[in-house]
Image (tube, rainbow, N blue to C red; front, side, top):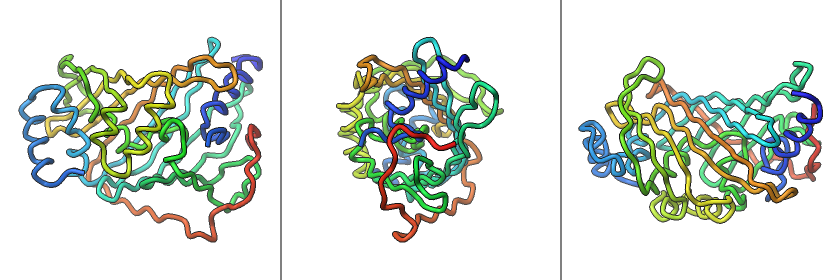
Length: 284
């Protein structure tokens, strides 16, 4: 990647409001049991996928890996994350790693992200924020519903997008991380997903339906025999606010080691940065 392409890719990241620059400001046990029964029986694809979020809640927790790819001007940028998620409390923690610069050196220290209902917390945010302080973002104010803002999609929010599945088909059986899975391919509608989502995700998903270039989200979902998502790849189209061009964003979520202990503690108010964030100025 030459420096001209690197600069263009950097502008795209900022335009999307990702971790380099914030440019823009449930079902019960019966429902989960039914979802797991349908999935385990290899039932109707649309029904299985619409209940995938409930099945995750039944699973309790897991480890998670994320990647977010953006393509613009012939350049592809990938942001990766790794951490844990508690589906019952809707709390997660990810360490997000930004792309290297053309010389191979890291452009930014890894960013710690805490995912919570209605909020995203980031540490090592850069852009003038002290290293020991957190930045808090109200996800209901984000035009993408926080599906791409943090450089990683909240695993439970990703699953809730599937509540809006309009059409889907079973592609076949394959393997993800050594686990046998069913591969489904389909399209979800963000407006429909918002209507069926948990209370915490309704406003963010409605914002995403308005903010993305299209409310339709093509996806590939890989579910194990218990109906738990093992891999989910979703495609979003975001309008670059500066150049008015559509940017393709592919978000991939990997879930594994279900039942892993999760201890996520949100920052106290005194640890949250209240000053001005320098726009379009990533820290090195």
